[in-house]
Amino acid sequence: MKRMLLMMGAVCSLVVSPAWGKIPWGENKHVAGQTHGIETLEVISQQQNAELMHSILPYVLNKKPVRVTVDISPLGPQYASQQKQFEEKIGALYQQWFYETVLWASERPEEFEDIISLLSNGINLQFVKKTESEGYRNCEVEVTIFPTLKKFQQEMGEGESTLGLFRPGGVYTPMNVFIHLEDEDTWLHEIGHSLGFADESEEGHTNNASPLYRSARRATNSVMLDQQGPEEDATGPTCADTEGLINMMDAWAVRLAKRKHPTDWPKYVSKRITGGWTSLEYGLDDFYLLGSSVHVLFEHRSELLPLELRLLENAFLNNAAAIGELSPAEKDFVQNLQQRKALQELKQHNFNSK
Image 1 (tube, rainbow, N blue to C red):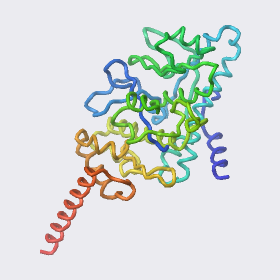
Image 2 (image 1 turned 180 degrees about the horizontal axis):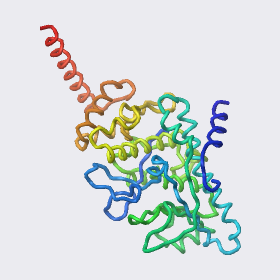
Image 3 (image 1 turned 120 degrees about the vertical axis):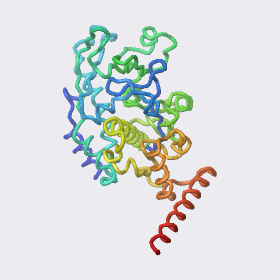
Image 4 (image 1 turned 120 degrees about the horizontal axis):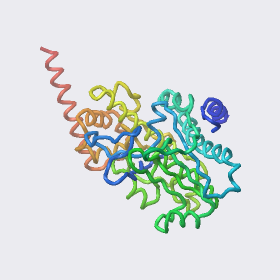
């Protein structure tokens, strides 16, 4: 009942113009050539210490319109009158991702207050007609719909034989989502790529997800899987997927805050992001910090800035039980931190006793 009421509230409050997990998850690393990803149409400098991904989430976090074109021309003239219906269907798929995230986050409302407030207040998704001028197109996402897989392959080439493709281009090229009518169950999966998700197949998780933002293990129940077996037939975003979306939003929130407030950015993000949080799914001890799995951050700790390293150390010191099973290297790391903390406390005690 609680989830139903929350769903009704989310449906009423999300703004669409016109009508509109356990992670593990991997943030997509399909980048143009060797450049970094696009963040609000800007190439990010390498000094920001991460390989960035293509996603509409910066627009969502900044409460900016996300402009989408839906190209149904490959379907032929007989479908021309159905333009609005296809736009509404695509809009509903975006809604589904964010509705489910609000529902899961509402299980712990104080901890995820920022996520609930942002997504419940609405996503400004605007459908526009495609225009192009000097290589610049007027949208963030282009959805192209083909009638069949065969037609898709004819147009895109045999090398692009997947059911859909998320293919970002240069700085001013929108993200492209290719789908077809023969398998509409894959549409939600392809929309997930425009949010920044990589495929959760073994190959996709290993090769197409950023090493820094990929979690320590792969999801077994996710719409970002290839849907080839009974365990992989999720028809809507799972807890794994909604956790992935929250974690990606956290990662982008950190990046945006660093850009505006490079020295004191932690003041401008949720305490959950800098303190860490555990899985939304009962019984699982995944722990996330700064938009990453804490175990992955540990593996990349030599790449972290001093402030980020301190936050990682605090997470290990204050949340050892929540973080779950530690590797031998992590156990040594925590033991050294505890010894250092005890020594500091002893020195402070001796100083105060004088």
